[in-house]
Length: 149
Image (cartoon, rainbow, N blue to C red; front, top):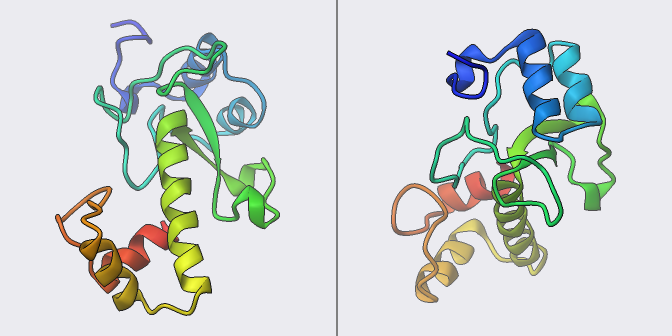
């Protein structure tokens, strides 16, 4: 089995570094893999939207494809002063990163307006907005989960 076709669990160590580099990835993600801070080639977002699975990544080129590797600022978002440093990064797909960020910003705006988690859930359900993952309807618990993920 080649590195390109191996499951995400089997691509580790030097092979992981090489695979990230083959995908056109550089910077903090490669540095983290070299240090053993990324242990497998897989999207680490709470919800992965890639139809081919968490372990699939497209090569990085311009424009950057949805399923290319992306460093996600986590736990501190860039807009909140987070930097691309190993303690504040997780591996993600570009699209998964974008969708997670959009949910966090949307819910944060509602919280800033003083809405409770239950009110936010009611508002999202009333507007017919489907949850990004899990059950079909929103609750205070899954609003919180979407915000803090």
